[in-house]
Picture (cartoon, rainbow, N blue to C red):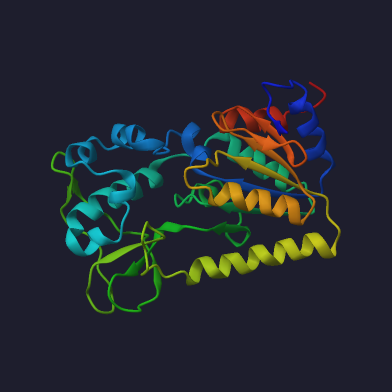
Length: 283
């Protein structure tokens, strides 16, 4: 049996009660988390092409353009795409839902964030870097396309772009060997991604889950905007819910379905859903 709010209007209240009673919180977030901040979620080719009309003209889908292949074949094109996203994420302010969740997390005995987003919005909203796992990496960090120079910060890196031609005019290079640098992001068909930073985050995430077990925490998972197209976050949420006997509050306007034994599905956008489950029960 699947559960969502369109079937039972009491789901929000049940979810709120579970959240209030929990003493540990895990926030899992996909691309839908950033939509209310004005970020594109690239849902389907049409959504991607609305954000990047040049890609439609070139006949490239998101999967085709988000490939390490272009950093060798056409770095000006690759960095037009990733340079524009780097600037976009730097200038975007996280919506109020980020702060609402952080205020809630700080009232719990333990908390963590697991996200597939590479935008750094949780850090920008004030979340502790040591409590975030970015399973697909971060656009705010770079690596070399050729040598093992490690991972370094993209702070101070600017990528000027001719938006009409959709070509980067210059882009970052490796400080060690001088080759083209690339974002430290797991792309499609990516065998060259340096996962060391994310591996360290994953270890801290596993430590959090171990603390939940050792301290017998009542864990609730709030999942926001995690779809089925790239289901990394969604599958992680469900795996942890089953392994740790945790309840899930799935906030997703288009795909809120969840097994009723796992929790509740709220067909809402990220900000709306967060507001609904965090508002005072006294109101």
